[in-house]
Image (cartoon, rainbow, N blue to C red; front, side):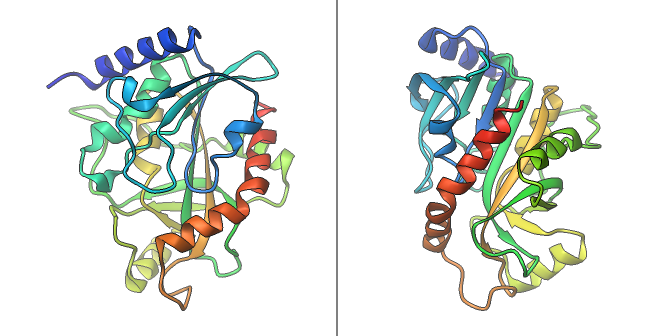
Length: 265
């Protein structure tokens, strides 16, 4: 089986070839509701179909974009926007889930921004609320680390970057993200379990990617868009259409927020 870091290096080399950009400084994985940020942060140098890059495939989720963009920021740095997230529930294995962040690291990225659309457990969070991720609980029963690879996850979601984000919007709340395996939504009992364990946000991505990013030495900023209240907190049934609609409504505001945060990096 091919080494995942070798594949990431091949992917990074292909990105450099197709974009003409030798290295990148910041990477963004833009989940539901966050995609417009890529249009606001700077000048797009290259937009590459993800399927042209080794190890990537078209996403299976409606609302996710299968392109990789290289963007020149006003400060001269280069951002890599990964629009080809692989979710754990797609069944491709955890190596594929981690491939995007490992590729970002191989391009030279030192700051990884992970975003998602998620369910909120705090009942005062209304749909459309952006929340900083302060920590996570990984309920996938898996890890992107292989063999005797021991990686410290203290301050995994950088307190420095969260403080920086609050200089842009001091009202930003934070919470502990709980990654479930998916693709089914959590039951009300599972949401209560997550709450008892110390969770505030439930979703199906991000935690495994964050672990891989830390292994690669990157500093991580995590942001969730609360697209709905979680099962049992919200009294109506959950639906993917509801998630997409909440993302569309919040997109201009939260994308502007993220662009202003990136301007300070």
